[in-house]
Amino acid sequence: VTSGIVSALDRIGLNNDSYEDFIQTDAAINPGNSGGALLNLRGELVGINTAIISSAGGNNGIGFAIPINLASSVMTQILEYGEVRRGLLGVEISSTANRFEKDTRDEYKLGDRNGALVMAVTPDSAAEKAGIELNDIILSVNGDKTRNALELRNAIGFMAPGETASIEVLRDGRTRTVKAKLGTKASPVTTASVLETTDGAGLHEGLEGASFGELSREQARSLDGGVTVVEIERGSPAAASDLKAGDVIVKVNRKSVGTLADFRKQASNDNEQLMLTVVREGTSRLVFIG
Image (cartoon, rainbow, N blue to C red):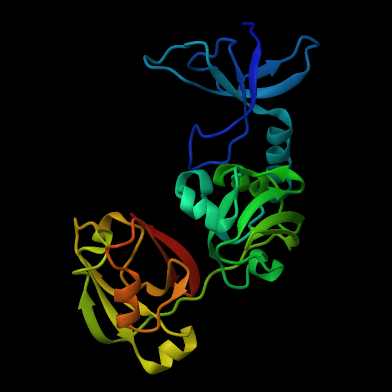
């Protein structure tokens, strides 16, 4: 038995690819102790020891435990369903603190707040049915602040499919609250045909190495205009971005682009940062360049 204090709660960010809500403690947790009990002074089980921060493999005085209410919820779902079922909102998100420069914060009327920027909304998802839109900033879930993407993912992921989440969003400088019944839904896949193409010469330097094409009239009509990304050279600046071949760019810095001429004008090298609204496999999303 080792003893120590709880030095922090709600720790996240240890592994950005997982759901996290750790208890931090300085009670020694050594290799082989994962799965052991974290007890309070009354002998009550408050957590399951799971991880340490260490440079050499031994305990350095910082350990992490899964809160017992979370562990109990996971156990109950496994016993009932044979798997863990997590709520799904149907959005792709990014932290405003990581994405927004001052000018962008002013444009969104964000002030000193932070939240989760909606980068994409899955068609027919809980988010779309609730009225959540691209460019919305999610500020809270069920009254609890979501100051970044990890906090939003945890808030939704710790709820079960079928539960209803009350979500506060900031849109065009105004806050509103929507109700979303969580669930799952796959995205449809669409493709684009190309009439005319151009390379990224003279555009923002982050688009160098990409070529762009004009859509057919039918596709342009269905998307209200836009240009498609035809090809991206391996190792180019464009390859380092989140842009992908097949994306259809419909807005640059929130301004619609109907043709290649519109795109070249809006995506010039005069901009320090580009915020592209693209359609990928039927889903609209945001891609930042620069």
